[in-house]
Amino acid sequence: MKRIFFLILISIPLISVTAQKTKPVAVRKQMLVSTDWLAKNLQQAKLVLIHVGRGTKNYDAGHIPGARFLDYGDLIVTRSGVVNELPPVEKLQQLFAKLGVNNDSRVVLLCEGQGIMAARTYWTLDYLGLGDNAALLDGGLEKWKAEKREVSTTAPEIKAGNFTPRLHPKVMVSREAVRDISWVTVNGEPTDTVILDARQPEGYTGEMKRPDFPLNGHIPGAGNVYWMNTLTSKESPTLKPIAELQKMYEEAGLTPGKKVVTYCWIGMMASHGYFTLKYLGYDVAMYDGSFTEWAKSEGVTVVTGKNRK
Image 1 (cartoon, rainbow, N blue to C red):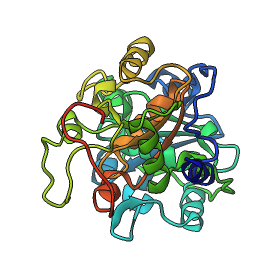
Image 2 (spheres, rainbow, N blue to C red):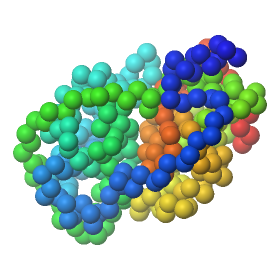
Image 3 (cartoon, one colour):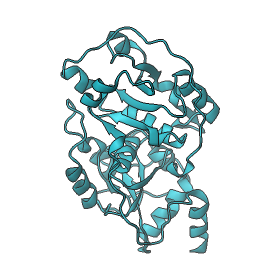
């Protein structure tokens, strides 16, 4: 047992597996802005609006006026066979500075595709120390266009920013730490940390067979809340009301005060879960290697079916 605790303290010093009394944090409402708020604040000097996408086709066809384009491919690398990992900090610093981000910028993120790339970008900024100054546009570009608001086909002129990363490593959890949390959970030890699988239920149970994965199912001890279930709908991707989200997560075992580690297939769905849980006030981190790394690692186990363990 001492070995297990030691590993956790080294890997994730602010997420403990021992049971402690913790007070729930208030909802962080500043992490989400409405289309009305954005329309009224587009001209704010410190506002940096970032449109995240895969290629510029949709951005060029019409984006929110003033939005700067960020190619999602610049936010990720493949490392040791694991896709969707963070690039070196130096590259990320240059990337966001080039977009005009300063240390005191108010960054608002949006994308196409139900907000998932914007959420991954938020997690990246949180790792870099700018999470407190960043937010997602609730409903994204879908809601903005559905409301027939103004769009532009002109890219803005950008003055490079002075963004300086101040790393926040507690937002990222290693495989070794997840293995230890899983062991404690499965073996019935007191714990205030919950592992949460953000994939679709069929991925969690193992019914979805991935031929590129040697194992299917979920990490032992993990609960499951599919990230799409936190949205009003695919067509209207606003977050559901706070009370409804709180109830959803509490029913999955995430009672107030619990600490959470999210994962998915490759760190995309999990980043949306990360964002939503942080928005609700949870102390949350993400296992970036996710099931891709876990399923291909030696000596790990998985659970199939709806049971956690």
